[in-house]
Length: 427
Image (cartoon, rainbow, N blue to C red; front, top):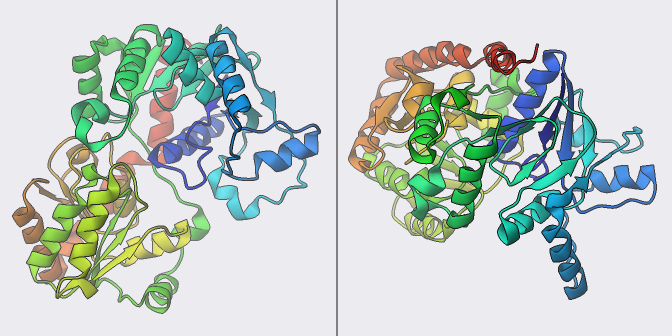
């Protein structure tokens, strides 16, 4: 099959959980022998093939737009529903992308339709119409996020990871009216909807009124570049101690966006009240409504035990994997998740997990984690103390987690995708 995947989140320099999903989706489809392309919406227009390639890989640099350009952009957006062309980005090899190769799926071709995703939002706000992408002949277009886009004459599949902006509207800054209207439109016009957990599937059916046979849970998979995932314990240990001043299996870890639904305030409260000597490492860039979360972090670091809390805004993947491997446990009592990739990543890398007994997270962990009420900081503190004081429990959870992660292997994920496409009439 010829399959197109949107680069809506893949175009972000640091990426998101949805970017990880897009990469894994593309890699799985390429591994199944499909012809896969990814269409980005970068604001570039090179006058030569080489310049197009250079500008494409330049990064997420945004130039300030003049009033005239903004007006032109709005007019273009209004007519986006009439169709926007995508042009293939030539990959000549002149640009050395080795240092950033991990951001891009392997074995795919790259297309770009300048500002397509932004202009599609303008079109939707103005007329309630999806932007139409013109990019050649494709059997399937798989949109990895609920965006107001479609491709005529192709099977349009949309992934809705969760309905958190509707379930927990106080935790995100999305335009809720637009988000709801886009999801409702997708519910009507999509050829099929994909999601990543049974919990999210039930939300989509109940809240959006989508027929059950129109929604498929393909779950997710997680993978790391082999050179990073297979780093020896001694290498990871030297990085942890030499770079971060931490001791192997002597700190608890949270990583993810700093935003309300990640429950960082209660993580800090639970850690400080637990009385453990192990440190707490928090890794995460500011996300939605992060001001209060960062304030809580600042207050905590000013407390008598504040020096035991380490905050890092961002880490390259290689260092992050070392810190995951070396942690005593991942502490991830999120208020709500469509899936919960950090939990699966930690289990795959052999790290014990403390997480929520709610939303999709029990589906991911099974019996391989300590499950807590995310609203109960006392319960979170108790779980922290249990793992801190009982090495045999920690080792048992590490072992269970590795076994559980096999269910979410790349092979299993690929099989679920291929079964979906077969049900939709493709071989």
